[in-house]
Length: 237
Image (cartoon, rainbow, N blue to C red; front, side):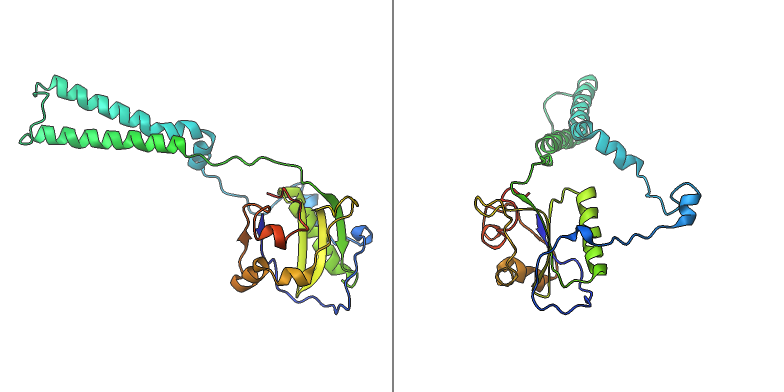
């Protein structure tokens, strides 16, 4: 998971005390262009295609094995050339041919070792898991409808195009939004509510606010995620 700040624009609202409310009744603001729909397609910039990168991605195993084949073929070519050239098989330091053969053999062996390293190092595949917890939809009751609509739009966009299953927004030390999957509070079946004051005192929050950059947590079961982010599902990746 990654913890970070999203935006710093001012929110036109003065909260007294945040209370959760159901966001399903708020209006959604959607901007659409009638001209683009009438012409029957998207007319914006199209993403560029890199044919070489696409080919490498589709043939990952072959590309990783390529240095082994190149090194092996080069090694055989050097040995064959040494055999048919009539030069003594014993290396002679005074012979330029021997020095060139030794250099070619060294490069061929290096290429073979590079291919072996490429085959041994592979990116770890991501396994999709079902978060352990309960569904939660909590929004501060003092937010204006326009801000609520923006927050819901951000959540719907993240949950639709990414693997994001939980979203928590804390602004200016105040808990604004908790939506998606949340940790279950005991056996009551209720979600663990975010404690903004406790969150602000943790090293994760302080580090993010100090560096103004996201922070990656490899495992929520370990410190500091286990103690500072108890409201997220325990198996959050």
